[in-house]
Amino acid sequence: MSVYDKLSELNITLPPVSVPAAAYVPYVQTGNLVFLSGHIARKDGKPWAAQFGKNITTDEGKLAARAVAIDLLGTLHAATGGDLNRVKRIVKVMSLVNSTGDFTEQHLVTNGASELLGQVFGDKGVHARSAFGVAQIPMGACVEIELIAELA
Image (tube, rainbow, N blue to C red; front, side, top):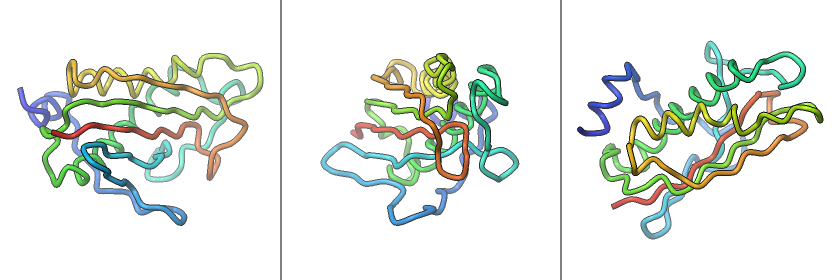
């Protein structure tokens, strides 16, 4: 099954590449690796501002991380020249989770992105990962995720 068939089955429409909010580009390719800049969680088109341990639950966070993964797929689609079937492997995901000092479920929040990547890419979507709790993310967003992929 092609990646696009899977996206259609999941009822996912890829968004356009987000315009960077500062002095960086959405992605850089070197050799067969493409590095996607961090994408923040958005809700209703605006930054999804919240802090875990204060005013957002882990389950809501999984949905936020899943939404970030969809945005990342839109950028990855552009980075592949419009062909996500060129993705040989999702190599690494790094997740920053806006959390209070006593919140310890960053890994569960990040599962929202990891699980979607596995659904879309199958074995090619299984990746290495880091999930960090941080004191703040730009624009108060609850989650920011970056991704590294290998292209064929």
